[in-house]
Image (cartoon, rainbow, N blue to C red; front, side, top):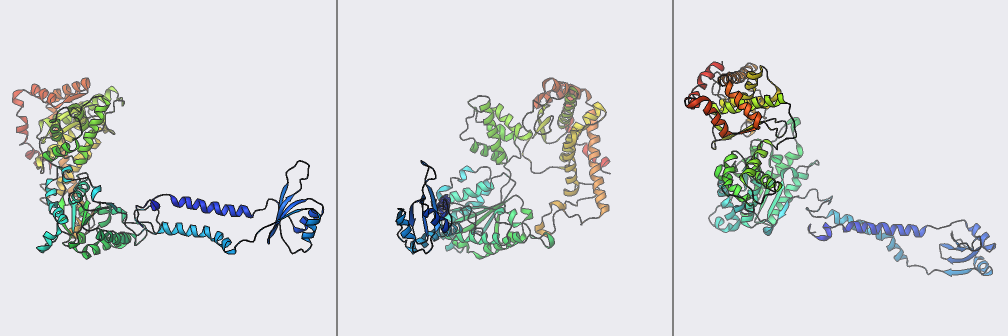
Length: 627
């Protein structure tokens, strides 16, 4: 039965169930006698003249009795009939009104009894045969739960997807195959069986898959990887078979499995094995091997954790092509912003370029969220167009969280936060970090942030040098060092900074091979892909405890060297640190331009070349601190 039928999709079965219960209730009520007593009592009442009228049927005698008091209501009664040849004579003698009933058709009576049972069986049959899209079909658990979008229900086109030009060009030939498969088959070519979209969360992998279906104008089967895995063994494999069977009927079409890692994780052995998920994965592998690509069924999948997928999924003949959907560059971010701002009233179109420059590393979902926050701020401020102020505030809300002006800090806490943030800002300004200070604030934001220093990369970067990583560690330690210099002790406010600094140092030592004593060796087993060696992520069995101790010492030495470096930088600028903190306390917010002017005026023209001199400093600092 069609799962979109209004009969199956509605609540009509509830009406049928109500009718069945009503019929059963009527039959039960019809068989209940208001007043029942023995046949002897009936004959005694008849002899006493208390019976007014009776209705005689083959099974029983019913009627009404004379009221006990004058003006009262007659009392109904019922009694089982027995063979009594004198009954009719007694009724006539006492002037009792006698009525009879016509014997009913026994087949009709049997039909009334079987009707409720037939209705119940009909409801069960229809519920059991409900289609895969019908909720509650208890015999349809093995059917695919994929959402089917027909040609006209996919409004997404390539023009709606921006910032992923390389991925779009990779998928263009898939669209050409779906539009005209004969062109490929005449030359003996075939389209890849499976296409895997890989990239960070929010980059538009699902949107890109729907755009392919929209451009090709073919049906689109969409399903999440977690929907295949159930508690009962065998259900997931049955759903895979049913999904591919439906797709073959609607070919040419596209099957899209989102979050493939929920289904295709590398198969384990021993107690960690998941039998149901592995059977489902095995069935998917069989289906990929079994269907003919010339039929026109293309399997697309998306994941942000390709490193944990089973190697059998990624070999040639299954997921033949891997398409990277990466974070957009500045031009890509600008294109994404223009797509989302089509219906948005902007004061100036070039404001989007400002947002694109401020959002290095943001993905499409982040940019859409920023524009939405800007619209909400515009409405809240009762403005007609979105301006730069709203866009900048929206970026800060997404990056650092909303302002918490209701959170009142004591004067001592505000002063400590001001010195802390100014320590970050001064360290970033003096050292070559590859990032510029955009804004400094001591207004609490988000969850637990009592202040923040907004730093933006000067350009899109895909590689970082050892010196730049060390400078970033130094900036993260700048707030804690400023507190040490001004108060002689530290507070809990540097916890998040220490966590990030330690992560960078650990990656430098264990992952990037940037340790002088350990050499160009990587120990980052947590990021090793099981596709290549089959080992479980997180294993530390490849190096000894002695080597682990040396790694810990290297990480600690790297942090200590940068701590000493920042202490030296800020100690030479204590007056500048005090003046900057005083301005922050007075105004709560300072821009990057104001900070640069403050540093220039304090250090003079000669000190403006300090970042160039300090760029050569880390070599000596590393040599002293890494031992």
